[in-house]
Image 1 (tube, rainbow, N blue to C red):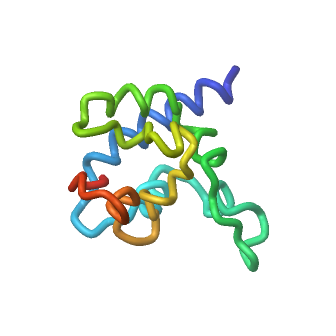
Image 2: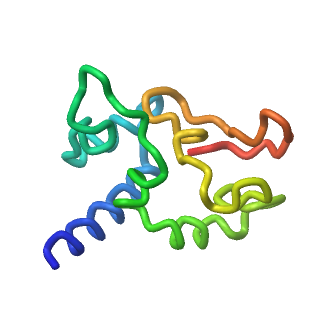
Amino acid sequence: MKRTVLTALLAGALALTAFSAQAGEKLADQHVKLGMQCQSCHGPDMKNPQTPTIDNCTGCHNLDQLVASTKNIKPTNPHVSPHYSNTLDCTNCHLMHQESENFCDQCHQFGYKVP
């Protein structure tokens, strides 16, 4: 029960800070400020870190809430694509250690700015 409450609080805090980041601050920095360690996303072996998957992200971030929060973005919800539905790894857009980018713009020109 404590883990569920902690996870919900952490997810809420992450969602709030995602929109209040200082210019140039990376998403990984925001996670560290919230007390997360690199191993939380990259696994225990930091000599050979894993690339985070959607499963790492949805351990804290509720996928249904993310989809709902971006449902009104036009021309299409960035969290539900016709190619991947809602299963595209988050790190395709949210690069964490670099400025985020719009993965879909490799083929499409939606012009959506990824926070």
